[in-house]
Image (cartoon, rainbow, N blue to C red):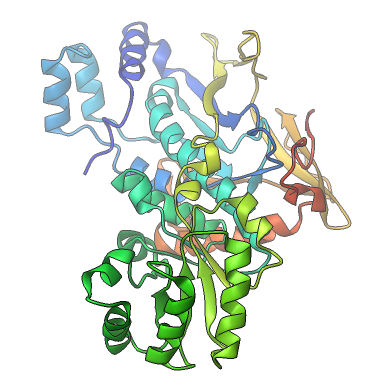
Length: 429
């Protein structure tokens, strides 16, 4: 299915106006970046690179799309003819998926004619804004969990396609599983899930429901114990499954107190190996508050798929350079109040001291990389050819691996949940 109409009308009308006098054919450089992180956030995590590349591959104007554009008189016939042959033929560089980013980090650099690049604005921003917002929130939850596993289970709290994207982004950020089967099929993410309260309510008794689940899934299953009375449910669960019961799930109540009581009860019943998972409207703050409780794993829904209150990463797509009528490169930037941009092609590096990230340095028209610095941009598309290493299941695995390395070099202050500045400063040179 084409992704060409996953865009805004003004991109096509700019194209039409620029094609009339040839200006749209000028070589240009666009960059995707965020001016600021959400309040209290010390870093962000890039996510969506693989999805963007897949959508770019499908960015074609077929007969049906062209007929609709013509019937709606969105653009003139000359522009329709130009769109019929559209294939992105330029170059794209980007931060690797899973990389940490900071204010003004140029996470994506698109170089081609203005005409080819401007059409990608909405596509790029819709992918990177959402996926990076989810990954950034998920990474904070992973840090708060302090090594305990997390599962993404927010499909019912977002759009059906966003649910798949969110599961993918959360997995890249360090979550271990998802409840979403399409995310499992498309991206190789482990899936999980057993039963909801409706299953218990269907049966004549809680014991009957537990027996049915254990008979079907074995004693290693997870039994939901808060439909009625938790203490009685735990007793019934161990009676039915035996001390080999895999896990109990708690989805309501005062979690620190309940978890401690359930742990003590399980131990007293001989189910010392039975784990406890909690799933009650968790976010990074409630997860952090449960660090001292005997929780074994977490399931997170609404908070992760909504970016924990920040469902977009405030990414923008800006023209920073183009060739003039004489063929010379010209740096351009906005001067608008609070929205000013720095012109010129950027080459970002991350300086490190003793292996710890110290500064984000963004060099303008200067590709110098010193021994203490790590270059951040990698080629994603060269001459219109997509690097498939960053797409599909293998691309997700690569991004997840890189996220772990990128997080590992951040200073300890990056993981504070309190208000504060970005973990490292950003400086232009």
